[in-house]
Structures are given as C-alpha cells and as structure tokens.
Image 1: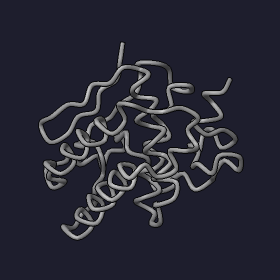
Image 2: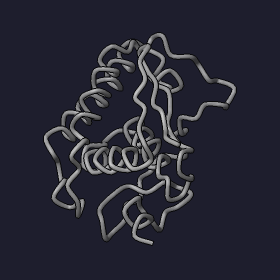
Image 3: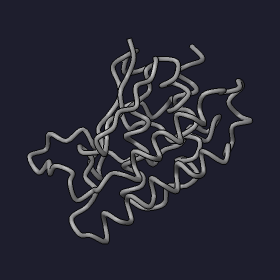
Length: 167
C-alpha cells in the first residue's frame, strides 16, 4: 500500500515510509517559508498528508485539485511558492532535525519538482462548489508546534507530523 501525488500528467508513487519522509522534508521547509494566506493553505494541505492522523496509504493529492488562484498573477505566484518550497527542501533545510537520514528524499523532491514545473495551474479544475480537497482560507495552518516549530493542521492544533510519529 502506498500513496500517490499527481500533476502535469505525471505521478509520484511513494511507499508509506517514503510518503512520511516526503511530507517531513516538505513541512520543514513550508513551516519556515509560508508567508501569505495561499502559502499557509498549501502548507495545510501538506499537514493533511500526515499518515499518523489520516491513515497509512490514505493520503496524496493532485495538483489539478488545488485552487491556484483566479488570475494569471495569482497562479504564477502560487506555483513559484511551491517551486521555492521544493528548492528549499532540496537544500536539506532543517534535515538535521529529522533524527534520521532520508536517503531517497532528494530523488522524491526532484521528481516532484519536475511535476510542478511541467504543470500549468491554468489547467486546474475549479472547485467553487466547496468540494475541493485544498483547504480554504479559514482552514489555513497558522499554528505551530512549539517543540518542533512545524505548522499543524487546524483539526490537530496540538500535534505536528513529528509529534504524531513519536507515539
């Protein structure tokens, strides 16, 4: 059992362990990089990939399901954030805090970066009916775990992905 992330006509399939590593390194970067409401919403989407809460083999998302914004400028800024986030993670940002060596994380990040780079946000579906898996502005993760300095999902304010994995 594993998890899949889709976008730009490509798929990143990860084992449950690979997904945990992927989410860990992305959240380390997102927690320090997010600054705008959209960026916090994207960080929330990442927090919701926590298999310790959501279940193993039950996470993953499609780039097409994200609300990238209505204008070309909003979509470009959103895509730029995701690329900057991936670049920061690829520079091993805060990896010394993981407590383990993630030997395959760089490959996952490079593959996902290629997916995002190839993806055109203008092709994303619109979810005006409220059925989007992308968190709304009121759901943006703006609380941080004091111990780990990671953003937490609104439903689970008291625990971050690292806290959940230590139980």
